[in-house]
Image (tube, rainbow, N blue to C red; front, top):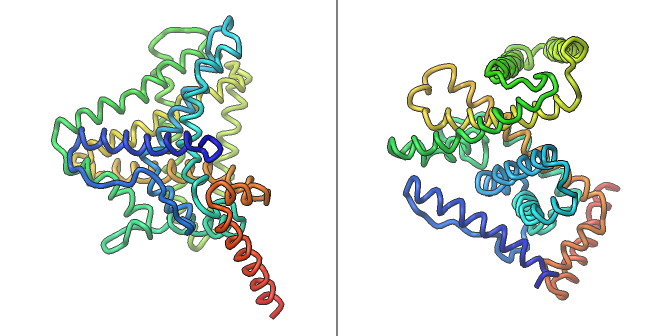
Length: 349
């Protein structure tokens, strides 16, 4: 059973059950959800897998991964690496499974041609604007609104619980900013306040890039690229100045990333919870921009290792072997050969 990755599939289905059981308890509206991929021979696109597993597996997997990295960076020096592995190996297994098992059980998930097609489809889906009549499988924006429908139709108590659960991301930031070398081991509350100043500066940069894209990207491509180059050089110069004057280290930059990324996600969740209050303001538009940026970033992080493994033909062959029986394997191999010959003839023609 373990050779057929039974433990991986069980962990994947357990994540689906846990997510939707929790959502039903908090918001109601129970409905059927599949607990995992069935035994199928068709290939699901990357964007389809992302829509299905994003909130139930991927976001939770990334959160666990971040906590494991933070624990590894700041654990006690007397704890050996073996002790760390024994304590956290099950959590590592669960987080990696939730992130990549949907693609592992996806037929032809490591076929290079399908990977390229999936990437084109993903970029089209993430960038298409939503609206009335636009289906969730055609636009990220329509899908995002559909994903938070349970919050919009929930009561005040459910919204308050959602807000309380979102506050954990700000605790991550509060704990990490005091481990920065630039803070010089200060426990002053001003350090936490200054971290929020940095976060708002980052948000302003994102807003500036978004406004520049709306104003210049359609007609003035060169101006938009020049604008982004100036912003990049400005940020780089600030980092260099801080490293010289305030002793900002490379470790500080890593820790800032680990602290600020969860904070941004927490702000998105808070924006969704208080949507009726901010929907007609610029804050909601900014929440939409931030959510798109986070989903795009998570998609790229998930896609990169899959694309790297797709370069190795043995990975695709191994996946086919453990997913299907011998008779079906022969048919799939023959289909791949015939498809390759057909493509070759079409290119020659």
